[in-house]
Amino acid sequence: MRWLFLLLLVLNVFYAVWHQQEVPRQPVEIQALSMYKGSQQDIRLLSERKPAAAIAITDCLYLGGYPQRSALSPLQPRLVALGVQAQAQVMNGDQGAVHWLKITPQTRHLLGESTVAELSREFNDLKHQIMPCEGIATDE
Image (cartoon, rainbow, N blue to C red):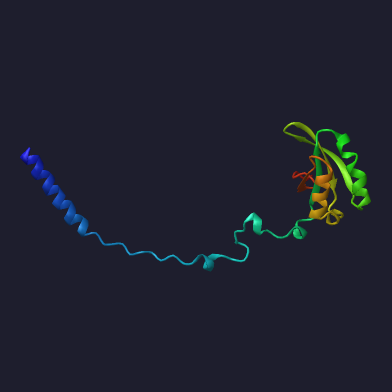
């Protein structure tokens, strides 16, 4: 047992001397991120995005979200009275077919947030979403 203790003691001393002979590492300086970052490499939060007026023209406003098409009937004349062009569309959702009115990008500016909020109060369960006017897949 004494020999084992002496062996461990000698190994410990050898390790301490060997460890002291290593060259201490110098800290590496890291350049500031602003040196690498260009104007287009900026990270932005969704809340910092451009206002609604700068949203791409390929995005349409959709009003509705009803399971029956008949629920859209009172909404269409109201939109026509505002001068807004709308088309009825059916999309498949989680619970089946969902009926929406697609507002074209040319007349979307006529519906402000206050007008959409007023329509939501007037028509029960009216939802609004901004989605691409066309599908993601193209003919090419």
